[in-house]
Every structure is written in C-alpha cells, then in structure tokens.
Length: 356
Image (cartoon, rainbow, N blue to C red):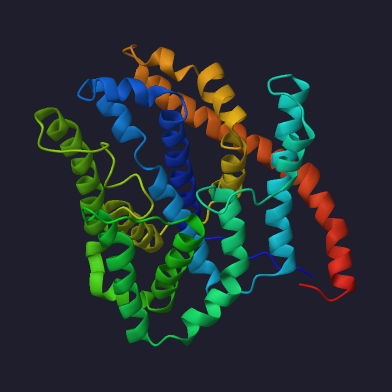
C-alpha cells in the first residue's frame, strides 16, 4: 500500500509563485517583445517588461532547489521516475498530434519521433536535462552524504567562485549546461537540508530581510543596466545579473527566497497543494515546443500588439494568470482520467514483482 505524504503548503505556494514567474518570463521572451524593448529600453513599457520577465531563471533554480532539498534523503523509485517520464511523453505526443491535426505544423515521422523522445537536448532544454538530473540523484546523494560539513561548505564556496563569480569576469569564456548546473544546485540544496537548523539559527529573523534585499538588489541591477546603458555607463542586456541560472543575483535571490519560504508557517491548504501538484504540468504544456510558443504568445495572446497599449501591464498579468490556471485545469484532468487509471495497472505489476 502506497502512503501519500502530506506536502508542506509553504513550499507548495513557493512552487506556484515560481511557476508564475516562469510563465511571465516566457510571456516576455517568447512573444517577440524583446525586439521592441531593446529598441526603446527606457520607455515605461520596456522597463515594466524587463522587470516583469526577469525572474524565469530564478524560478528554474528554485524548482531544482526544492527537488534537491526533498530528494537528497530519499530514493528515486521506478514509480517516481515512471510518473515523471509518462507525464513528459503524454504532453509531448498529445500536443504535437493536436498541432499536426489542426495543420498548425506539418506532421512528419521525424517530428513524431522527436515528440516521443523525452531527452532531445542535453544543454538548455529544461525537461530533458531535468530527467537526466533526476536519474543522477541516487549517485549525487551518495556523494553529498559522504561529505563532512566542512568539506560540503568548502565545495559550495568553490562552486560559487568558479560557476558564478568566474562567469562574470571579463575575458572569461564560460559555458555550462542545465544538467551540470542542476547537480550543483543539488549540492547546495542538500547542504540546506542537512544543516537547516544551524542556518536558520544563524540567520534568525534576518531571512526575510535577506530575501527582500536580494530581490531589491536584482531589481536595482536591471534598472541600472537600463538607465546606465542609456547614459553609456553600463553595457549588456538589462537582466544580465539575473537572467541566467548561474548569474550571481539569480543564485542569491533563489537561495534566499527558498530559505524564507521554507521558514514560513502556512497552514495546510488542500487547494494550494492541488494547484502546486500541477506546476510541472504547467511548464510541460505552455513551453512544450516552438509551435506552442508561437501559437500561445504570438497568435493567441498577441503580446506584441499590446506593447503600445496603456493596458500592457493588465494584459501581461492577466495572460500569465489565465495561462497558468488553464494549464492547471488541463493537468488535473490528465491526472484523474489518465495518470490515476494508468498507475492502478502499473502499481499492480510493480507490487507483483516487488519493484518500488
């Protein structure tokens, strides 16, 4: 008999907020809006969009931190991985076939094969890299559990130096992929899990202030790049300090927000937990493919057309919330009508052969 563990609503609320930040990031970056933003960076519309869409990589970091925190003391079971894998395959195949049937994109066997393949990129494709990272968790756990506290701390310091600080130095050629970065975040998340009491005790009531300070510093960095660039005293994309997973402020905001939400005392909420259970589904649906991105943000939401409107912020916020809620509803339908019946059958075979 499988025992369902009650999820902590503070972390589940955190999942929801972070997924909303990822959807907002895609609203800006996948819609054609950056072309207009770069053309007039100091216009209030551009400033709003830069600040609105800058948190996507923070959201990715936080999702992996949550996974690492809870999985660094847990086993990856066949059932857990199958659940994840089948969800990915379901959306890949169904969405591809829907677009093909509606003639939004041509049906090809190569396209179908790509949809069936759950690992199509070992670079920056989140889903593919997350699946690989998930399979590496047992090995990562053996490693982090063997570290002394001092060695664990030193490792994180070296990681911060070479994978975060080093990337910001001029003249340094640096490339990373999501798999290696997720493994790094696992090391950080496991340290938080192993020594959480000491960390909370050291920060005491300053965790909220720390998180707020990092968020404000990130906002300040975006504004500095925008207005400093206009004055010729800053170079580069407005979100350069926040919009890569290993950017120094993306890491600082992610870790500090995670610590703050972990400390929050929120009563158990079935509604929050149910919505949060579909956050990964939200990602798989709305960011499924290039065809989905074009259809959603350019054809349906028509984000570019709203750039010159005074109601741009209202459109941006309402679109993100509506997309998020529709995806949650779709995923809940999948859970009840596809996943649960499927796993009633799968669980019988797993139980029969003694597989967890």
